Length: 456
Image (tube, rainbow, N blue to C red; front, side, top):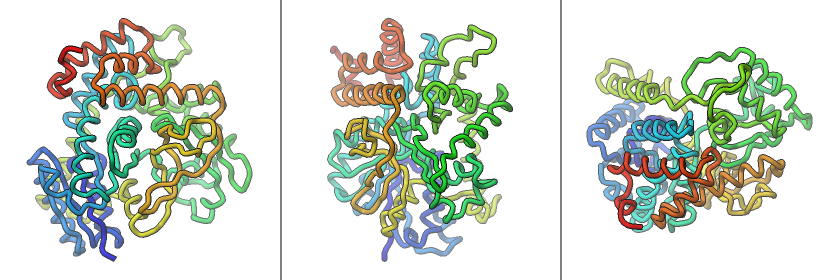
């Protein structure tokens, strides 16, 4: 069977461009298809195209490679369109976080909730919806896969306002790796690599929630609750934590234990989840209190981007052998799902989509990250346990913030934008919320759509 045509919008993505190339070359189900790179940065596109040509030749596979700075030139005939771009994403996340910090709102990631999540969606969602219109015109049967944060907001925007087939992804719950890791943390196996398919089949793991705000609802091995062992593992790691690492890494196990004590379940994505709740905002009062969140580390992220391009240049020049590229990369969440859909392997995978009854005590149209079976008809979520009270309320507040953010962007309505900002769980002051909107609009005038600056 001929492989699919996969269009990657954002070829220079830190988290996807190289991984997509690796997976499409290494998969027999994909390497007879076409990989099309799109990037508005002509120089970066050229570097990725050169890497692609060299890697394809090195493995002697029939994968076809296309590239363009104009997505419309390569969309025709696409089976999948993966969105993985951000114009000056690191710089503007830094702006979001610096301005928000002036008003006491501290964000360790700044790209999914809080003023940072709202304004990143302001920058990216209009472009995403423009791309969806091109997909509808040029390849209407293609699946659009959003891989851009805030993935829940952007995925929700596609679901509500684009006439295309779509779902959204985050790489944090990549199957089966996440299940293997929890099997090790629950001390069923010594390390994740020892988790065989037979053991995984006996492990009933339920994780669900809004993206980056997911919670572990069940962990049973052969019918036995193994969350006590998980707690022991988390507590042992927390006891060794020090004030080191970049902003998303600091004190994660200790933060997780506090939330577990409050709500009775484990936060599955604590590096982000600690940013969704107001408890570590503000200033330290007691000596035994965890410090407020660290601000997103712009320099650390720039260094990761620089290291990526250094590697790409080294592979292209021959300074590094291409065998190292194939050893250093690995399976990617999005292309694993594309492979499963195309080849008829149902998965399952964690996918962001409408709830459709999977979580019984949340609305059917709630946009959640859920374990799902897949085929070319799309993802179908599996039923999981209900959320306990408390966490359910927090989920609804985040869901409402996301819904209002999408509505504000589509309508370009400052009143709805204000409502979204003041519904957000880490914004607790009306004048500060208003000031952040005005300051961020002024600071990001070069990238926010011009309609926001007219009279409203």
